[in-house]
Structures are given as structure tokens and as C-alpha cells.
Figure 1: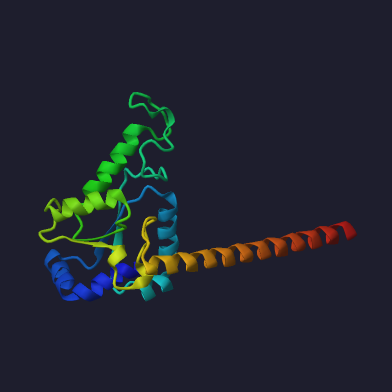
Figure 2: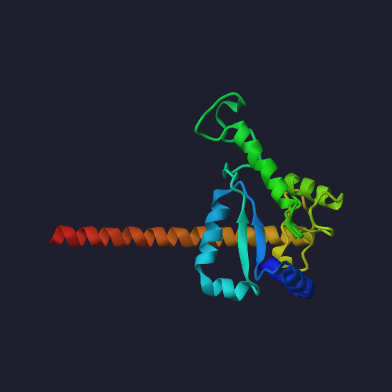
Length: 204
């Protein structure tokens, strides 16, 4: 959302003009994902109205893909029973995963501005199509997070050996160790608290 705020600030006059011509008072933000956790994070973000106001300087609404099945993998062969198109199951099957992927791509091609992780083959295919004029917008603006002007938003691919990514990996490992130590302290604190509560009950 902070990246979208960047785009708004950079293109405010043209976006306001487009909204005026379309007679709308809010921008549509397309969200497609195979990850259920992303949708939970979206709901958590929307529930924090003060955070929304601080982060997003424009009115907006989310557009979701009703065919997203949140299989938590971009690989059609993951988490699918019986990898068989003819199998009819309640769980995710290959047909449902393919429908999710293709409908997501169709929806993404409607966007005027697209933000992607160019470590992802799926995002790179999308950007190739947009660069080739397959998008609905007359002028498309695909942007890789890897080249974002704000270093905080730049994602490092697994194969990236730049000094910036090496330093970021070191920081992430330190953050992970700190977070693990914090979780351990919290677990120990909770364990002691439970023991104290049990002792109080036994004393009664």
C-alpha cells in the first residue's frame, strides 16, 4: 500500500483527471494471490482505520478474484490431490488451480499500474504481456519492486549477489534471530505464568 501511495503521489494529476472522467471517487486496487495469509493481512490492514489513513492518501476499494483458491503455491502440482483433471473432489484440483491462475492473469491485465516481484516467473510473464501491449490500459506501467526508488521495498531474489542484497540478508538473519529470541522469552514468560496460576489453584 505504501508503494501504491508512491504511484499516487507521482501521478496524482492524471489519476484525478481519470477519476473525474469516469465519475468515480475511489481507485480500484486489484489483489490476486494464491496465499490465504495475504488476504488475512488485507483484512487486518482494513480493520486498522488509523493505519489506512496514514498509509494511503486516496480513497480506494479492493477488487478480488472470486476464483482465487488460495492453494498457497504458484505451482499447479502442489497441494493438489491426484494431479488428475478428471478427478472430481471437494479439494483443490488441477482444473481449479488453472482457472485461478488464468483468471488472475486476465484481471491483472486490466490494471493501469502494476507492481510485481520480478523474482517471480508469473510476474515476469505478466510484465512481458503488458510490455507487448496486451493490457487493457492504453499505456501500462509495470514496475518491479527490485527497482523501487525506496531501498526498503526492494525484494532480493535468491540468486541476487549484489552488495545491497547481501547486506539485507545479513539484517534479515539478525532480525530473525532477534524475533526467535523474543518468541522464546514470551513462551518462557507464559509458561511461568501458567505454572503460577496452577499453583494458585492447587493452593485453594
